[in-house]
Image 1 (cartoon, rainbow, N blue to C red):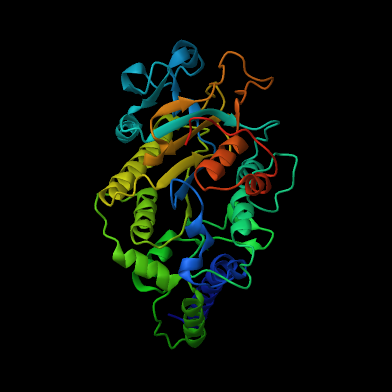
Image 2: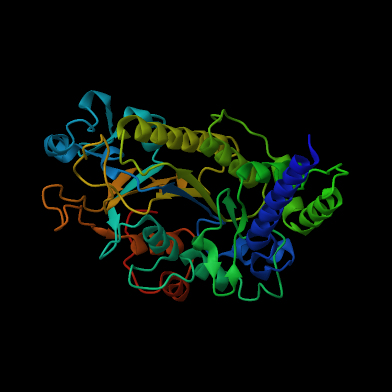
Length: 423
């Protein structure tokens, strides 16, 4: 290799590493100065909730999930089909949940969870004056604020900051929340900093789980070799949660088959942390690709298949250790899709959509809340929401995480109705 190209390659390597180091510093090292305190003193392990030390998993369906082809409106199938002559799911390819709703064959693995009382659907979730921008709408859902407010902090960040009021001087030995891959989400941002543990590439988190270090040792005598070795050493030594993560992962045994796709592997890693008694109570995983403006029929069904396989494997794995009742999983997406298909065999940005819940703590299956009336959309032709998403969040905080009224009000920035019969 000529000297010029060698220098360029070294510079690119250096820049890429420094970029990762900066991301790590912003998301995992400084963690809003989260302190280290005795494991037994972790407030999240002593929540006064009847169900015990519960764990919450959030699945972000990034891009705007089409709710009508996820939970199919069997109650008005003819109208649904007329608006989607090419994109509707035929009755022959549907699995009925009840007389009103069905799921496509691609979601078949979830039917066993439904039958066991481990799946619920909250119909037509949204918020007033919806914004159909991806970035803005993601901020709405992550912040727990409506579209008229600023997005400085996340709803779980505000909740966790109350659980950890002294985190700058008394950090826990375990991460209070983990984002399994992806850029740092507003969800865990608080007025005291970022309260989640996040490594952008989930495969690097797997390495931490295996070795306790993010980077392997580098033998490089090039111009920047020593610098890279130093930065890697600093990075490895300052991920102060890495040993706890490694210990938990090493203690856990995978007891079911996980598909090789990214979402299933994220859930496999999450199951290891939970079964290994890491102690973290909140996890975030993301499945991208739901912005289905074109060729939706195969793209969307493949995504739903990945979602269904991952969730089914996850709960099958947890059930081997009798942990399925301790873990609640919920989906969310920045918005739904329009009722009518477009001219590109896809759907455009819409509004309301269902939120799915999974777990043994649900104590029964069911579809909750009034569904949207397909025949009476808003003035822009979109579904009118029936359940405010902050009611969903409030219910999770109260009935699952054990938050009191003051904590809920601060976490959600207001008072919203608790949904009866959900958890």
